[in-house]
Image (tube, rainbow, N blue to C red):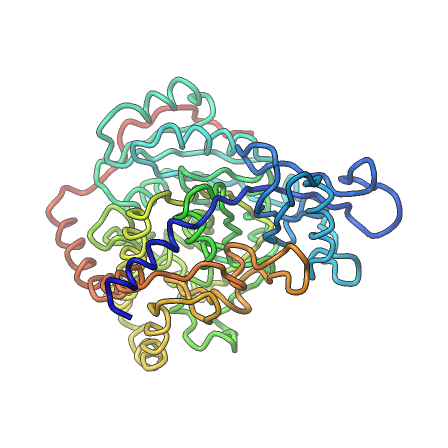
Amino acid sequence: MSHVTRVRREIQRYLAIEPVQIAELELEPGPGPGPGPGSGPDGGGVLRPGPGSPPVTHGEVFLLVRRGGRPVAALLGRVPEGADPRTVLTELARRHPDSGPAPALLPAPAPAATGSAVPFTTVVIATRERADRLAHALDSMLAQDHPDFEIVVVDNAPVTDATRDLVGREYAERVRYVTEPVPGLAVAHNTGLAAARGDVVAFTDDDVVADPRWLTELTAPFAADPGLGCATGLILPARLRTPAQVLLESHGGFAKGFTPRTYDPADPPADEPLFPFTAGRFGSGANMAFRTGVLRAVGGFDPATGAGTFARGGDDLYGFVRVLAQGHRLRYTPQALVWHHHRETWQDLETQAYGYGAGLTAYLTALLVNRPALLPAFLARLPRGLAHARTLTAARNTDARSTDARGTDVRGTEGVPGAPGVPGASGVPGGHDDRGHPWPRRLSRLQRKGMVYGPVGYLRARRALRAVPASGATGETGTTGRSR
């Protein structure tokens, strides 16, 4: 097949991708006849659209399944025209291996953590010229059930007063506003870290909507485990309206599955031969929290990494590995859920593919520059790492096992299981299972190019930082008290 023909086919396949609806289904907490808490009047599930989505109708649906409010599974189902969406999706959910009747059910959620069960927390949101998206994120933050937290918005290298005006007009009583003039996500996060008053500092993005229990679930593990340095949570798509959004999510997205897991440097996982250098398995920057003292002790994030710098990314991965390298544990907790607005266009996907490749090797370069003691461990894993990199950047067919650009196995143990054998259900976007859309060669090539560029980008970013004055937070406004 000629290159021109291959490109044309990739374009045709991409343009043929159809939108997918987003919905949530609450099943009754336990088996037994008749309706129960959270069930419908006939004992079925309670169906509602995802945050900001219209009511569910016929067609393909990305469905988050909950029990007692706890996320337990996801599936991709199709509602036939003329059928009742709740009836169809409830049946599919109950036949899904992770949400069906006992004994396959996950245990019921523990009682809500309140009071001293969760630490006082600072939520940091770095933003730049996206006041409309930020407003939705802040509204979801202020709806959190966490008993004791504050919110800090870091306005990164602003060119207008839109963010300042939004916070001052709508949120001044509940949100602190800080300006960071030096561009770069890691720089902005470090400014938020410096401003944090909480025992734990949580980071999320301005393009998410957080589940009401997000902050409680994300921070409760710190109270339970004094050796915990970092926690991450579940990220699901807020929209699957464009081909780019569906394609990204169908090849892994940001999801890490519904199984909690603790990563302990004193007991390296046997199934992670590259641990801790495949940090993309641990989580993502849109949903992460650190014990404040631990993150400060390792120097925060490397300011030469992250979006907005020549390095293009990798700041979150750098933070994960630095904390693990100091002997602290990391906990992935899928009950801590945020809904993320994926990028919408093909151009966005190209930028993202190149940036993920660059960020991956940039963060590894940053680790070795800032902590040379990691070099022997890195070199010992290098042969496997090179093989991993080749697989990571391969063009991916719908039936091929591979990995995404952040190191997550997109067809296997790391993701949400699909629903084999369930009529009308298939692998979920982000489910790392039965993907319906090949990963274009163009994006794979951009990932490889980004990986080659990453170390150069990191060094360029370091030089650029030396050319600017030391950054410092300015223009802080807002309340000096806590949100609760």
